[in-house]
View 1 (cartoon, helix red, strand yellow):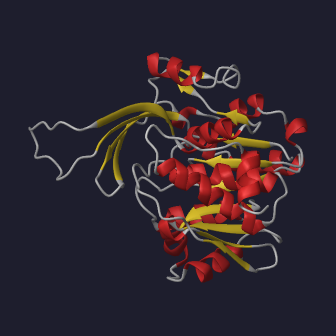
View 2: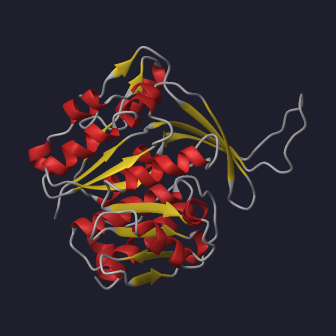
View 3: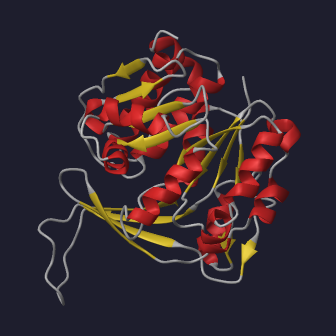
Length: 311
């Protein structure tokens, strides 16, 4: 199995809900559920890999408060070298709605202070050679994002394929944000975007055609994956062929981090050198399990998913 790593935003999520309708200012409502858990794209993907029994490295940082201590304790062996920044830890309060969707209130916290030098010190390029590095939270990790070229150079030097999931920009998909993302994609061998992000970036309404358009900006042999929620996922492979996987019908409890969990399952299967369609099925199966369970479950070890998906 090829080595795996994730780089970027790990923070604390406080999930409350469901809430409907949205309360008026100055009032208070009671909700049925609360959960404090690891959040952020990097954190969610790492949790899924832990549950799947997959080995990986994670480069992240924390703040110098009780939330930072709690976050590091969630990854006791892997967080030893995480830098502790002189600010509070980034906290996201997620309010869930009856349809499974959510609204976030997030503090800036520690995420903007993660630097390339810190990431470089946490990752062993020799051990990761020939593997995959999931790069996340591009619009939250300001210092690292400003040095993405150095990260891409480091990855290229160690034959590490970068898989990009930027997340949604805080100020939306402005012309500048679209241009920056396209520039990053030129250095990545995989793109992992949701359907709205893919079609917004390209201005093309059909997700498969939008994925093909995105792939034109990437290196030869790159793969573009489009996460489509209840419609499953599709991918354009290195030869430009379309692969797809439907999603099972599940009762949605909490969609927070669904795309991140998909990323973990997809990349784990890809690292196991499974066919692209099997990778899509694995990602969809694990994400479907996660969004339909409370407390959240990722199901079985990776080997079981690979057998079930016909890999």
